[in-house]
Length: 260
Length: 311
Image 1 (tube, chains in turn green, brown):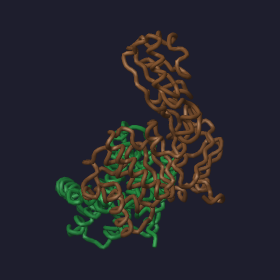
Image 2 (cartoon, chains in turn yellow, blue):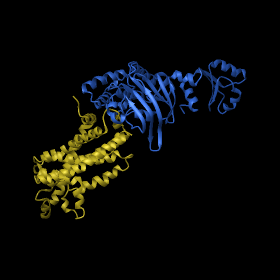
Image 3 (cartoon, chains in turn cyan, red):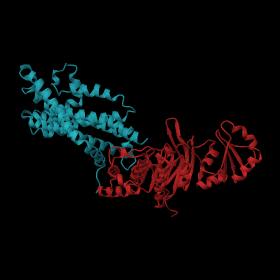
Image 4 (cartoon, each protein chain N blue to C red):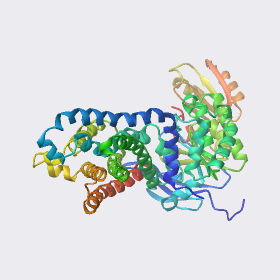
């Protein structure tokens, strides 16, 4: 019986994870929990009693509004953290991709293995957020279950494009700027912390095309039961449109770099 | 050997270009199954580029290349499945244990886990690292890492084993342990292909070799054949002191079959080194030191390229 190649690549990553799982799991819970408490309850106490804010948020508490979107932002942040240096390192520093390339594995299989690993890695972090949401009475909902894969789909879009960027670089000099100029603005303006309707007119369409906004809307819609089927499919379609070309670009870049 | 047997490697007019730089400039090579074959040459001769093409990880620029009768461009994965590779730079996973490094690698070949564990233990034994199997790779010496890389390359029980400069950077003892392991593999019938810039390594391990220089093959044969063809039986090395070797050339003319004047010594190629030395003394020359030795591949390389191999 054969095991899919991507799973066999994942096995290596899981062995490495076994060494660090304790800190990893703790941190996965800690970071979103801090956001949820700090922003949700802290900012929430300022926002929740104002008529104008209640209208903008749709008569829910700020924590309820914020919580579900953290599923998507957590997936994105994990993707960014695990797909820049570790990917370039696989090519340049530790040679792990080179070792794989010498075996019967092919470049697309290596890419699939990498994505599967990221899905697991994001799954752990997003799972931590899901637990926090399940504990808080206002966000406790069966909608958390479909929201988790929705967050992972959103995270995979970032995984694909950030991996592609890292795989096309010779040096890591641009990586901090990816964090500063792409990830942080998306994090702040992607609709997780306030409805994008509150953005100035010119910025709103920008938010609409970014994958994070679609991920946030999906997660929030599922958890708060505010999403129609058509809308949900629309968000999934946009994420798929982002994901597929990114995946193809990764396949090509890995093939080019591993088989020179 | 069966005459119908497919050659392990068959290359015709093989070239490799990186942009404008031509690393391999049209080489013809054929390696039979079970043979130990070497690419000998200085750094930059095109050995590693050739090896990468053979390993199915580097596309051929022009010419033809067949590994086990298969084209690497279309059957790369299938070819790699039957190869063992020891790259020039170790790419072991430093954070994993020795045993896990082998198991993970075996899994890349889709070998069942239990089988991987069994093979990994056998191979750690073979490379004399069993006692450290649960230790981390980071803690190993250079020679141990190389041995582990060799064990890793054998996880898929390859028909052909490719080693790119297997002993570069190792101390003499570590080299000898490694040669011994490779010799055992050779005895088991594994086709060995290695690159090296050490003549003694090529003489120890290779049935046949090619000497490469600047992307081309400049000679081919067994180590003995090459030495017979391009050198004399013995070599007399004379040292007259730095800077004064050249000025002694004139007075040495006619001693032995041929002279080679290097910066630090004069090499006198002669079938009988002792009588050549006697002749030198008869001419009233007093070298600071003299040494008679057997010819080596170093002399072959010097003759073919006019350059010393380990510069």
